[in-house]
View 1 (cartoon, rainbow, N blue to C red):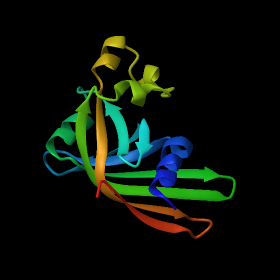
View 2: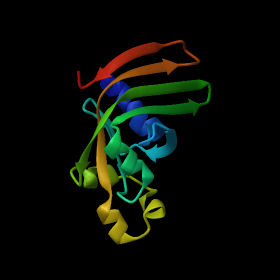
View 3: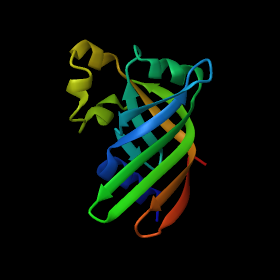
Length: 142
């Protein structure tokens, strides 16, 4: 399976994933995020500079991401561990393009305008179809 196919599953079929980060004291934190864009160049997502998540990414750029898709008998898991970098407002329009939740998460237009885009640009990933037995290891940015 090609990286582009795996990223398409992450973006289109899963759409939501859990990202784990650590704070300045080394304590882990996990939260659901909306996958804005996922392709061969990485995973792009957004967060507000007012969040603890943003502060954690500023201190430590290492994250773990996991997504799950369950459709009838098919169960797929994608896991990626790697590094993120802040792109700021670059790609914000693209990341927000099909985000049906942005108005719920950031109802204030000013807050929407201040969100920052991050890119998981380098990492090791693992795809597994739990019901079909397929397993693939892949890299981003290497």
